Length: 246
Image 1 (spheres, rainbow, N blue to C red):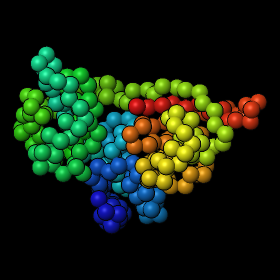
Image 2 (cartoon, rainbow, N blue to C red; image 1 turned 90 degrees about the horizontal axis):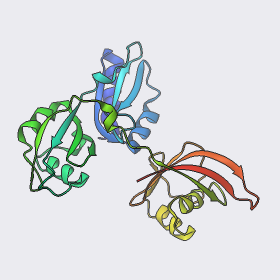
Image 3 (cartoon, rainbow, N blue to C red; image 1 turned 90 degrees about the vertical axis):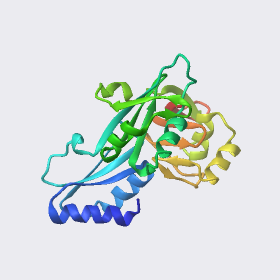
Image 4 (cartoon, rainbow, N blue to C red; image 1 turned 45 degrees about the vertical axis):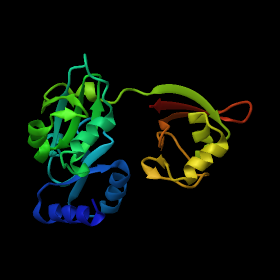
C-alpha cells in the first residue's frame, strides 16, 4: 500500500469521524506511516495483526474520542488443518504459496503461524469465506479450513532464548557479530547488503548506535532483542543480555 492511500484513510477518519483501516503491512511500513501521520488532528492510530506482536498488521485510524477495540479490525483467523500421518511437514512457504495461488493479494494476508498438523492464517475478513470454501490443498496435501475460534494464546510467538554476550561497543556491526556468531567483517557485509533492520527499518550504517529494547533482524539469521545493557567488563567490553528468536 502506498503512503498516499494511508493518508487518504487518515484524512477520511478526521473528516467523517469514522474508523478506517489499511490492508496488512509489514512493520517497516507501519513504523514509517505512523510516524508520518502522527500530525493529523483528531485521529488515533493503532496497528494490530490478530495476535500479540504480529509481524504483519493492519493500521486502524480512529476518531480520538472513540474507544479502540481490537475486535473492530477486519481480521479473521482461519485454521488450515491436515492429517499428519501420511503428510510431509508443511512450511510457512507452502501455506503462503497455496493461499496466493487462489489469486489472493498478499496485502490481504497477515501472519501465518505453523504447527505440526495445522496452521492459523490471519486474513482480511473479506476473504475468509473465500478461503474456507476454496482452499483444498496445500501443495499436494489435502486440507480442511474453518474460521478459528480457539484461544489466541496458543498462537502467540514463542519466547526467544536469552543469551549473554559481550561486544566492544554498541555499534550495529559489533552487536550483530556477537549476536549471530559471525565475524565483524561479515556483519558489515550484511548491513551494507541492506538485509539488516533495526526496529523494522533497514539500516546501512555499520556504526549505527543501539540501545535497550531495540529489535535487530538479519534476513536468513533471525532476530535478536537487546533486553538489557549491563555495563562494561574488566576487558572494556560491553555486557549485553539479548533475547534471540529463530
